[in-house]
Amino acid sequence: MSKEQTKELLKVAHDRLKQVCGELDHFLNHVSVPELLREAEDAGEETKNYLCEFLRDLRLLSVLCEASREKASLVLRRSRFREDWAEKVLSEIMHSCVYAFYFPKNEVYEEDGRYSYTGQEAIKFRRTPPTKLRDLVLSLSRTFECLREELDYYETDYQTRVRMSLGMELPGNG
Image 1 (cartoon, rainbow, N blue to C red):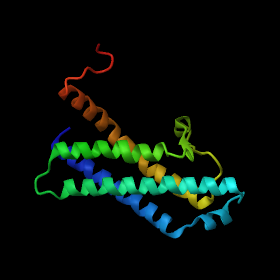
Image 2: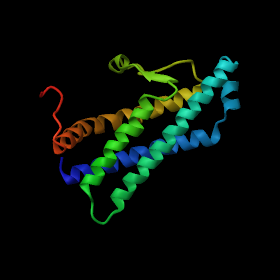
Image 3: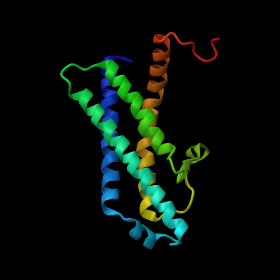
Image 4: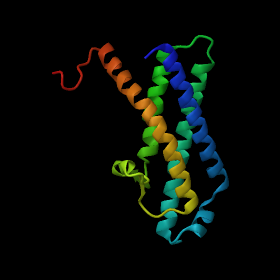
């Protein structure tokens, strides 16, 4: 990938992360556990624990996305664009932000890729979340799906080049 393409991809990733951070910040700053419990179908202790786990996962995702967005911003603000640094940041975005979204620590939801081909939502929740929470995650999933698609090819190419530069054998070549 050319230097210009890498820079453009970093700009796109930065903009998508900015969007994610804005959505997460707004939600986390304006919605509380008691409010979500009032909206939940079942307001028992299990639901409260689930909602607390869910919000912990969202706070972690918010921190990871904000840190990655700031790194991307630093690379883009430099007077001389450093492609090697940009590649590392793009890889970190994939491994921290995208993976944190699709594999939340508390497993409050998961992606079922079979549904993505049917036009149905691919995110399956462990429990039925309140509408506000469900809507947020489904909105974020559309942004992360785009980000994953944009970074997937690039990430595979980057990892191959890193392995080759370290003299490591690629799987299947031994």
